[in-house]
Every structure is written in C-alpha cells, then in structure tokens.
Image (cartoon, rainbow, N blue to C red; front, side, top):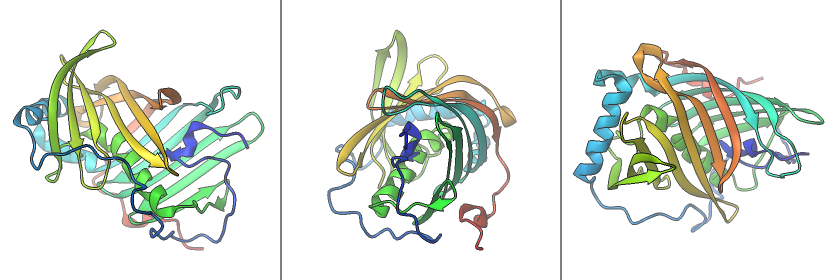
Length: 281
C-alpha cells in the first residue's frame, strides 16, 4: 500500500497497516523507558516576558474578550486538502478531515482520501488512555500502543489545541526563553512551552498581529526522531469573532506532508463523552 504523511497521526503510524483484530480499546503498557521525546531543560516557573507574549496572543485571538478563550475547549473542524506521500515518486492525494475534540484529552477524527489505486479511510478515537484506530473498516493495532497514544495526544496539542491557545494558558504550563527573531523575512516572537508529559513546543507569533503562525516540536516514533512543523496562516475572524487560521500546513523533518483549507470551525457548548469511543456493536 502507498504510504502517505497522514500515516503519522495526527499522523504517527504508517498506512501500510496490517494485523487487525476485534474492535476494542488498546492498552498503554508498552512504552519503554527512554523511548519518548527528548526533553529540553525546563525551568520550574514561567518567564514573565514569555507570559507577556502569550497574553498579547490571547488578546489578539479573543479580540480582547478574554472570556472567549474557553470557547475552544469543545471544537469541531472540517477541512479539505492534500496529503503528500512520504515516498517522493508517489503523488499527493485529495482528502477530507473531520475532527471533534474536547480539551484536554478527547479526540475523534476521520481522514478520507482517494489514492492512485484505492480509497483510504482512517478513523481514530482517543479518550485517554484508551484509543481505537480503524483503517478501511478494520481495527489497527500499533506495535507500541503506548507510544502511539502518547504521540497522538502530543500531535493534537501541537496541531489543533495550540490554535486556540489552550496549552500555553493551562495552569500547569511553563513558558520560557522568549526571543525576537526574523524568519523568512518576517519578524516573530518565539517562546518555548512545556506542558506535562508532552514534548517541549516552540511557538512563533507574528510580531505585528500576535497571531500564532508556527509550532515546532519533536517526538520519537519507533526510536526515530520526527520533527514536526505546523504552519497556521490565513487568519481571520471565525465564530464569536475568534481569530482563527483557515490554512494549515504540516511538515515532518522539513518535508511537507499535509496542506489543509478549513471549511468550518465550530465551538459547541459541549460534546458528549460517548462520541470519543466507537459505538459498541
């Protein structure tokens, strides 16, 4: 089977999937010591200058209505775009993605695409620490469930939750090492973020608009580091006036694996807990 970037969940496992069994929540007891992401040295408390960068970003995101920050705790997003093969000779495929999420640890997403030879459908549910992955109607069991589950959660923090600024405003977050840099002829504010068991994230904010435009972090997949860069662009007011990105681009180790256009952001008052596990048959 062709292997596309979507296979690294948000996109951490190859789509050369095999060995499916009955649908059930997977255990999380196979993560070996030392197999997780390499952590940077993290201070015990946030740097005031780094906190000031986050405060400016929150004001920009909410239009100064700070109470709107809580809106992001329940979200639904629909996107369409391209997924690029990790094998350069294989073309991209058109795909759609739908995500439902409840902060901080519940996710349900579906990817549907048409490859050169066949259709691809991946659906995943996460209600930490349990998760289920279904590929083309059959359950997939990753070789290391605990690593897979941790990487999925870390990807989701960096690629979705970060757009709503919930991770850097979490009470347990530590933000540090503020810098002002120029990247691709653009002035940016850069801070680092540590949040519990996840990797250290680097957050890049536009110096003028204070919008979050880039997130970088490193996780480990089967002993191999994977550097992820998430680019947020085309920011404009969405539901409730929140300043949201409408174009998303994901790179792994500097290679583009996905490009998405957001068709709809939604922020319901709540999402029922049973939506984050498949219905029992």
